[in-house]
Image (tube, rainbow, N blue to C red; front, side, top):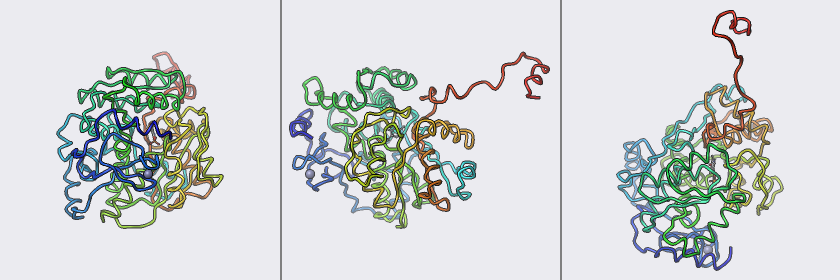
Length: 434
Ligand SMILES: *Cc1c(COP(=O)(O)O)cnc(C)c1O
Ligand SMILES: [Zn+2]
């Protein structure tokens, strides 16, 4: 990352020294540990490494905290004591994502050869804008309020655009979001309907992201909070709530294995952070868990690096129907590799045909219609079981992070009417249905 990018990220809003973001104490560099006050910065001034939130949880008593969480609202704000948000966050206008269903997927387990009662789907299509992105945007929104931004923005592969649009509408922010111009219609409509500005960029996601970095350094971007750029440290923490919910829904227990999709790798990285926090806080019993990363073959930079034993991720030009995961140059790729290796997991990919098959498999076994990202995780789970990397006797959680209604094209050519008949019984029988 160039030095000028770092400098320019600090001047779009004043660095606040005493903002109220609950237990968030400072920003800390993931590479060198250098700490700076909470502010709209994302890169370390010493080494250009990514900044993340450091917390002060020292005052918490485990059992009191557990009770407080359990008595909290049925959304992510039950975990407010563990997030970079003010204590009264639940009273502010936002779209209250989270507390989505953890579905015990016995039919799917039978198909995949997993022991009964051991396979779960965390179905994040149940969020307000039908993807997991509502979790992360909700954190960025609180940071934007704290830092005095008036416009919410982002670079998006689709789902984020809708989540930002909805959150901004509800909270009374202007929104202006940037997407690759060739996204699925479901995602474009979903992003546009909330009334903010939606800009298609002629290029892929990585081009969109580069453009946003430029805009942050320009006077035109003054007062803008880019949820996944200058507010990224806050945004990213929203993914911890997936870890918290999964463990609480399992009766305050760690799962043995998780299958998590990778776009930038932020979600996977923060799920691990969330699990580690629960262990340190004593909310779950410490035991080994494995995190498996899932990519589409047409955009598999992390999977390729994992299999080659590399520590660095070589960028790719994405070409896959799993557009929400189509980030060719994933910012958190190296951290994902670390986590997969440290926990004894793996990173695997499936091709587009396998993605479609997996979407249909999940729909026909569990009544869950996933978007292509869910096809990626279910497809990868199947592949990992077949190649012996995922243990079918252990508790496994597969994430579905989005809704199939947004990616209808992926399955449209493969589905349709069983028959068209005249409205009488003869016709019904003739069609072989009687
Ligand atoms: C954004 C997104 C992800 C994960 O993104 P990361 O950048 O890896 O955090 C997963 N699934 C869906 C549907 C998404 O939109
Ligand atoms: Zn640093």
